[in-house]
Image (cartoon, rainbow, N blue to C red; front, side):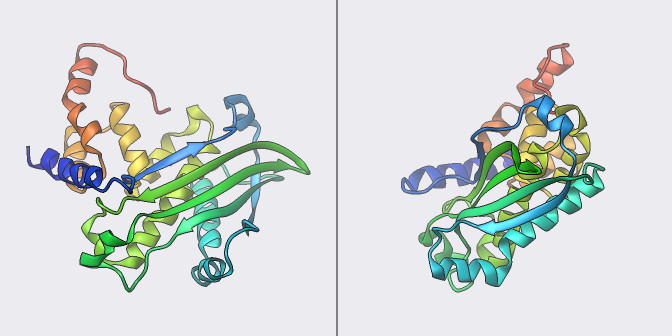
Length: 241
């Protein structure tokens, strides 16, 4: 009961902060179709920031090399999963963010609102756009982890990793996603772990571990036993790959 309680508490806190959103990743827009993804041969990344970003925010993003960090992780993880290499390009444009403030952490951090990072992503072959989608990860003001509250650097790292993982995930064909999910587990990416739990791909010990760490939401954790029973009785769960 203890792990479930630890995930329910942040959820309740988050709901009390009516002007804030809970931690999570949203992927929207014209997402690439399976057949299109199979044809991608991405071997380069173009990085930029949206033209309408305020000058002070742009300066801070450049200071932390936000878009470069996202692109570097996408390349590293797709190289690790043998999906990097070819003449296509991925274009990553950071268009929205609120970065953690090193001066407002720990007890005052929750009063400062959500931290978030959003990116428009396009795949290009020569001058033709093959696919576009948008990824945004939010760290909710009311349900930051202890590490995210204590360390602005850790919160920023989590934002960058969450966006980069979702970009790599979307650029990988469905049937080839097992390696990218293994990276998600290793790096403790919330979206990857949540999806694996719903797909029945986590062991009982892994579910217990990630729930205790706050990497699985209360809603997902509450259905874990029902999913295990369904799988044990031969029922089919949604697939991750």
